[in-house]
Length: 531
Image (cartoon, rainbow, N blue to C red; front, side, top):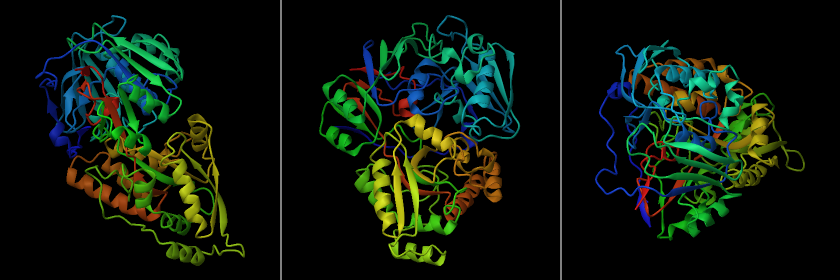
C-alpha cells in the first residue's frame, strides 16, 4: 500500500507571510502529465447548496472549491501560494492586504473577473458566512483599478491570509449575486451556477451526484488536467468503500470509519493518505448546555469529564486513527499547549465530586438523568461514543438517555435552538484559532446557529484573551495568550474534550498529485491526473 506521511506544521506568523510573488511550482512539472479522464469522488453527504461563501463544511466545500477560485491557495507546509491573485502584500502595520489579480481570469460565463468581484465577495462572506470572526476586522475593500483589491482592516488580523483560502473565500460573480437577493437562499447557489474555478457545473442531483466539467478558459493555462469530476453520494460509508474497491470511485475523502480503513489498508490498488487535514484540525467533544441544570455546575462537568477514557475512545472506537484530546486546540496547532487541566479516567474521584456537590445517589444508585444527542453519520466516534459514555456515566450514577437524530439538518437545528442537554459532536479548528476556535467560546457568538457558542459559555477574561490574540502580530505574545485561554477553558469545561478526528483520504494508486495540501480534499483539483 502506498503511504504519504504527515509533515510538521509550519508557523502562521505574519512575519513569514507578508510578501509573496513567485508562481507556485506544480509538483507535476518534473514528470509527464497525462491529461483527460474523470475523477469520481465518493462521499456520503449531500450539500444544501454549492456556494461556500455562505456555507461551511466539507459537503459544500468539495464542489465549491472546484467551482470557485479563491485569491490564494496553500501548500502542505502552510505557505500561501498564488491563485487568482498572482501577487499580494501585507502592509507593515498589518492594516491592509493588497491583492494583485491575474488579468486573464474570466468567470464561467466569459465575464472578466475584476477587483469589484473580489470586493463584493469578501464583504458578502463577512456578512453571510457562519465564521463571523474570520473577516470581522475587514472594514472595506478598495478597488483602485480592475486588477487590484486592497482589503482594509480595522485592526491587524493574523488569519487574513488563511481566510483567502479556497474553502473560505470563493470569488463570486457580482453581476449575478449582486442582484439584491438574499445570498444565503440565492437560487444561483444551486442551479445555473457561474463560478471562477477550474470546473463548471453540468448537473446536480441532490443526494445522488454532482457533475463538474473542465473549464477550458480557466486562468491557469493548461489546467485542469482532468476532463471531469463527479461527486457521487452513497447511502453510507460502507457503500462508498465498496465503490472504491470496485474502482467505481477514485477518491474517498474525510474517511474515518476504522473497519473501512483497515479493509483498504491491504488493497494495493489504493493509497490511504493521512496528509491533507492539517488545516482542518478536527476535534471531538462532549458539549454541555450551560443554561440547563445540572450542567451549569462546573463540578458536574468535571465529574463527567473524568468518567470518560479518551485513550479508549481513540484506540478502541476510532481504531487508533485518532489521538486523545486534552484541550480546545488540535495538537498540530502551533498554539497548542500541554499546560492545561487534565482529566484522567477516575470513576472514584468523579463519584466523590458529585457527592461533595450535593448530587447524592438515590436508593437505586441514580443521581440524575440526562439526554445525550450525537452527531449523525460518524458512528465510530459519535454514536458509539454516546453508547460508551452512557455505560461509563452509569457507573457514577448518571443515567443517560440517548436521542438519535434522523439526519444532519435535524441535529443541527436542535443545536442551533440550544435544545439539548449534552451532545457528542465535533468541530474543525480551520487552521487559525481566529477562524475555527473563537466561535465556540466568545460570549458575543451565542447565536441560534450550529457550531457557534451553542454551549452559552460566558467568561469576560476569555473574551478579552481571544479578542487580543485575534489581532496580536507578535507570535510569542499570541502563543502566550492562547496558552492562558486553554488553561481557563480546560478548567471550566464548557465542553469535555475527547479526541482528534482521524480523517484519511483514500485515492486510487494511479492518481498523481493527490490533494495533500493543508486543505487536502477542499483544495482545487486542477493538478490531479491519472498515470
